[in-house]
Amino acid sequence: MPITRKIYTLVVCIVFSISSGYASGPPAHAVASAHPLATAAGVEILREGGNAFDAAVAVSAALGVVEPYSSGFGGGGFWLIHRASDGKQVMIDGRETAPALAHVRMYRDRQDNVIKDASINGPLAAGIPGMPAGLVHLAEHYGRLPLSRSLAPAKRYAEQGFRVTARYHRLAGYRAETLRQYPAAARIFLQDGSPPRIGHLVRQEALAATIDAIAERGLDGFYRGPIAETMVREARKHGGIWSLRDLEAYRVIEREPIVTNYRGARIVSAPPPSSGGIVMAQALQILTAFDLDGMSNVQRKHHIIEAMRRAFRDRAVFLGDPEFVDVPVERLLHKSYLEGLALTVDPAKATPSTIIGEGPALLQTGTQTTHFSVIDREGNRVAGTLSVNTLFGSCFVATGTGVLFNNEMDDFSIKPFTPNAYGLIGDEANAIAPGKRPLSSMTPTFLETPDRIGIVGTPGGSRIISMILLAALDFADGRLPQSWVSLRRFHHQYQPDQVQFELYGLTEFEQQQLAGLGHELREISRRYGNMQAILWDKTENLLHSVSDPRGEGLAVIVE
Image 1 (cartoon, rainbow, N blue to C red):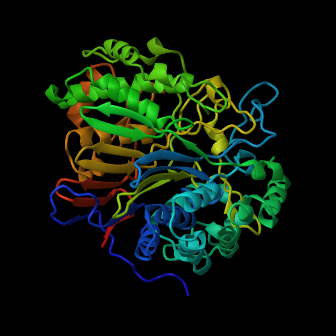
Image 2: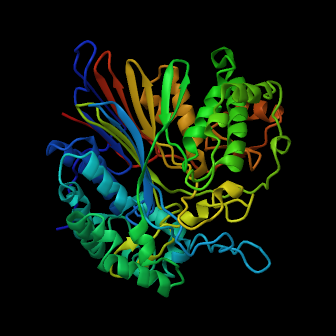
Image 3: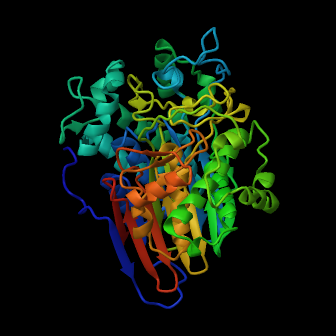
């Protein structure tokens, strides 16, 4: 039977409280994710005795089924975790890796020009997936339930089907032309070659079998054996370069998070190969030099923009996979260095990015990636950000597996200082190399004070970092997650040298004033981001679980 019943009523925010003075643990569980069925999967597992890590497996897997435009078993992700029993905080790095045959010129022609869409469409654009390995690692090292139990909701959604929403219909329209080029993908994600109508049932029986293989055999169910062999064969048939050795060699890595302090708040975020933690920490530390509270809205935004500009410049030059390049984390986060950057901010005018460093001006945008936040009664918590990169990844499905391949190879610097699909540029630190993980903007984050714990993240490509930065500033100002997810959003990423802002993100007055300071402005024709946030107020023992009103997600409290 297809999954059609309404499990929960869609809400933006749920609050739950038990007055108990200073709490040792939350009064309940909480889950916030970008899709109601994924949230329901987490709730199901928590109610069956699973902890936050089991729920994270369930939510991640479910999102990979019902949001194929954002994540999947052919993609990867970062899971920032906190274990309550010993306070351990670590980021599980399930980022994709470049195949062994990958090389620095693989997306350039003989004249050294970048080949259009070569790193975007088809299996050549795909890195080796990390999502399945991340789920196995979470279950085996942190979970309480068998992996098969935590994967059961996702398998059910794949097998029985889920209904197309207005969001799915709209996003499929953006990639329908490319999906049609790959029949296996078109059969699953389109309807008679067109974006499926709202209410259409999407069944993924082959993916259900793949999930079942992972549930039964763990890593061997995906990275070795028949499914691995089929993926490699199909990829190579269509121009890809995967090998069985690439899959067998894949490993997740546990990494120490990036931690910074801002106005009494401890910000715990993603380390390289994510750029999010370092860029956000730099921007926050630059902003400590200024009294934002004493500024007008325009002056406050001007200073935040200038902090973003400088932090994103360092992203372009210095950041990459720490297994391959020496990322100068200590220097980039050194107090003296950041104080020096703050001194270069002119309160009366914008600093042209060409003064900071050269780079091309090109902007492309996209909707991709997904996020969930979860906390359990013990205080275990997870911020998980997952991706296949652009919408529906590479649009290629390996026939017989149901696995939709990512196109994360585009997150490498295809050519030094040549923009990727999101207008982000990079240098040799993020150049393609076999086994290397591309630089990412995914920024799962914990926001912490002695009496308040926040869990937050969002999709949004290059704008992820600025969205989390604005949320962190809002948290430091004492506001609730209802405010974090609803903030009007603006962004600067060094190149292109322009302030991007969502529809209604800046008032007419703010636009006029910022333009007067020398900022070039670009309004995005829609609202962007899909933030999922949880706040535990330890003093009042109060939980807030909030889903971004821009999306179709669901936030719940589980008693």
